[in-house]
Image 1 (cartoon, helix red, strand yellow):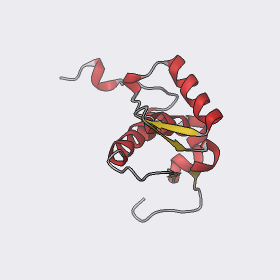
Image 2: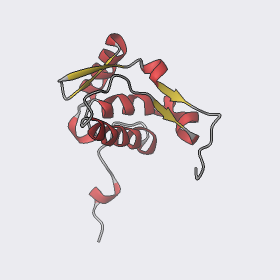
Image 3: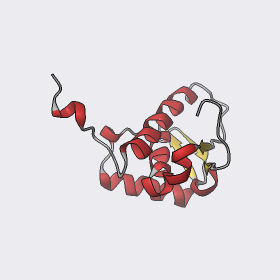
Amino acid sequence: MYSIFDIFKVSIGPSSSHTMGPMIAAKHFRDLLLKSNDLDRIQARLYGSLAYTGKAHGSNKGIVLGLEGFTPETITTQEIKKRVSQVKKSGLIKFLNQKSISFNVEKDIVFDTKTAPKGH
């Protein structure tokens, strides 16, 4: 039997697939990157529906937060606005509060509407 918790998930919104999905993927990617000490730049490239509607649905916000190590369960609404604003202002993503990496939200999150990867 399913419970209400199987249907609804904690999310930062406005779209679970376009905000929470990129956030979780970015955090997973970040966790893999933490093993590399020579990292100095990150670029995220979105395709398909994420490329077409991602800005309106907050995909860029989800990516920023995921790269900083947050999940929907570990950040508050107030922290979301603060962290995204801080990254935009400073041009830096913080990895585990240890290493900062140059990151321009407008340039390093690419909404690629022209490329369709194989199998997509």
